Length: 304
Image (cartoon, rainbow, N blue to C red; front, side):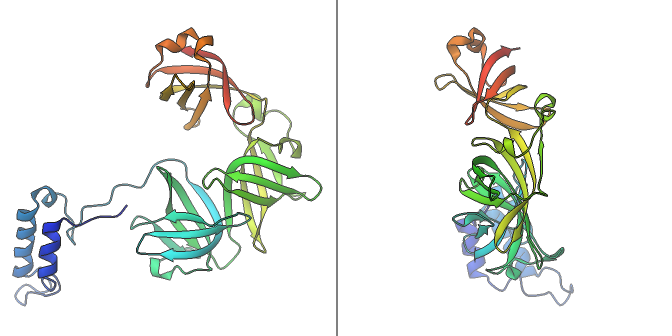
């Protein structure tokens, strides 16, 4: 998130470019009387800013976006420090992904903290990302001299068991990613006990299945190490939590389940559930639903 100068402050700093570089001989390297006067001028020009200013006269940055982070492995294609963005060619992916960064982003090379200027195109990197609205934001960037690892969560588009080619639509970018599933790749169901306890294997890699994959680079491609099956078409689930979004016209409800702190969007037919007339954002609900390969569909809905 960029920070902007008010016109009054910009004028003061433009007219007094050396005030903050000079030192006062009577007070060591502290702030000069001229600089102190500039501080007072800033406060007079913009009183609303005075209480929140930090050295450099810029307001403090907000905390990083909240939510579940995802690690993406790939090759840096472009770094633009003016627009605070870079592009990453994800292993096995299509078009490069645009990722935003700012002063909150931490940069590392082989575990050692580095400045942004140390990041260059063609770097192999693992980027810890999080969604900030509709944008992908970099929490940290790890430049690597060895094989980069990454994570991908999305929906299976296709799986060819003959050559182990798995194509997944990446939830973050919306782009398909192609990975290779090998005999040593571990596959396990995750989530609610009734679903997780069922037998699994490559048969669960059917079109429409929701999965999470940990993978590593191999000659520019992605090789799956671990695949977690989150939902398969036809599987049933039970959700409970508080309503965070409601659209009765479209028949959509979103809730956050406190058991895993994940948000789920569920389709329902209001005419089938009289209790839906009592729904509003903040309502506590329980929902029995099935996954049809594209969305969760409610078969039972209770409002408390």
